[in-house]
Image 1 (cartoon, rainbow, N blue to C red):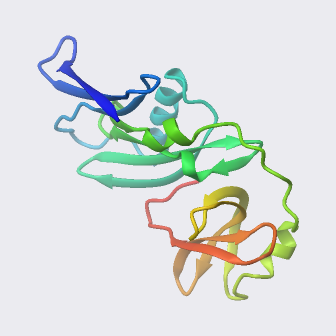
Image 2 (image 1 turned 60 degrees about the vertical axis):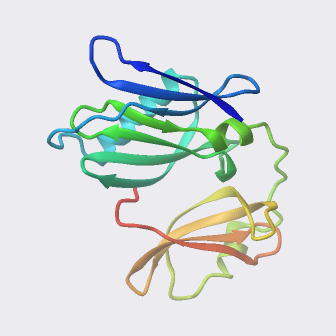
Length: 193
């Protein structure tokens, strides 16, 4: 449940809308759209503008996950880190104008409701043991620990491997306790690390 506030941005005639959670009054959604001019920022510039905005508004210690762009607006997804583990259930998304780095939108519902201190046990498997579950043709570019929701909607500690196979980029999640493959996600070209 949430409530909505709308108005006009200072020194402009642009409207904005913000939704807040009823419990705690946390911002869960913000939108102040506008026509975006010629692209000036690159992917890193959009990421840096997003992170600066997020850190200055009380969203620290985030890992970048995905990047998409449409009509010179970048949509970037981040998730918090806890002891170097990426917490996927608590992700948030920022929309940034590629002409000047202005944040045009923010979606934080998952972050608001799922960002909490977790008791994350050490993985039972080493990264090398978990790698054995991967297809031998999969070339690993990088890896990290990640907490995801599995198909049974249970939080599961995994090794996240990013890499290539058959000309495509993928993110593969291997259970850090039993070596089972939990999830495979294609990585779009706009992904960055």
